[in-house]
Length: 185
View 1 (cartoon, rainbow, N blue to C red):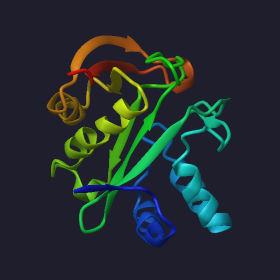
View 2: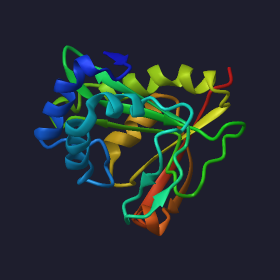
View 3: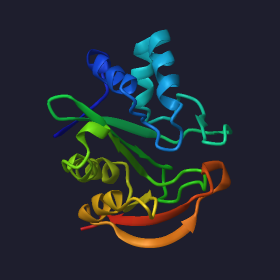
């Protein structure tokens, strides 16, 4: 497994996963169709907006349809002989704090036909040096309490349970588990 910066050369594999029913947004399944439309309009712009450390790509649409300012972020494609999913890192410069409308520094999604292979665990460990490089001392990763596979992924990467809470209404108002992963040795 390797993490790759999104590229126009590999966009067909990404689109294929979207068309097979995978969504890069586990809170908004309609994101897949929106992304297919955006790729059709301008694939180059779509790809460049996935790697956005200066937050130039514009606002983020939340599950309730509201929009919030984008945080600096990078996205990497999980690749193992084919497109297997994505992992993203987002941050607020100068602090580990995040706005309440952002559910963690790191999010990931593996295509259903490659789940259970350890790809998410490997990707999470592999992106931690990038988090440290942007100045974070720890990262927050969240998941649903009814997703034991994701809990295992986070724990394998060194995550410790920090709290259980109810997400903002704009994020669906679901119960969440918040884990912290220290980046200080």
